[in-house]
Image (cartoon, rainbow, N blue to C red; front, top):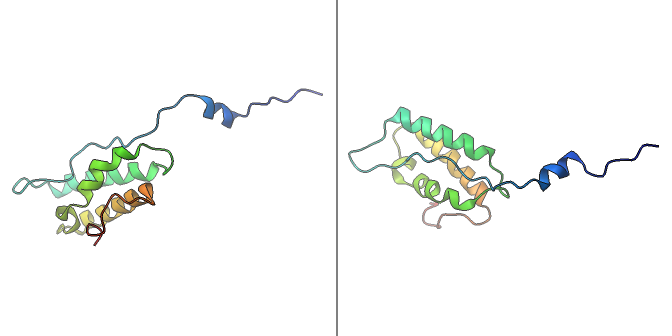
Length: 113
């Protein structure tokens, strides 16, 4: 009878050193008065951010990489934007931030109102 191998492919992958994934998105989402980001650019950035965050797992990423994005997503400029698409994508991204950071939300109670 042939001998079985003890190492399974899944355990081999776990043994290989791997860096903790972090958010790679680094485009600005907020702006100063008079320097608004065009809606098309903002939609593209929010879609890219949403897609990247959906691929992250809660236990498996560097939470500090979300700090800047979480702060920018809570901006009134995005939450009260005149474009419905911007508001919808902002809400989607906020849900992903809350999912990834649960149970420790990066927002205060006042910010969540």
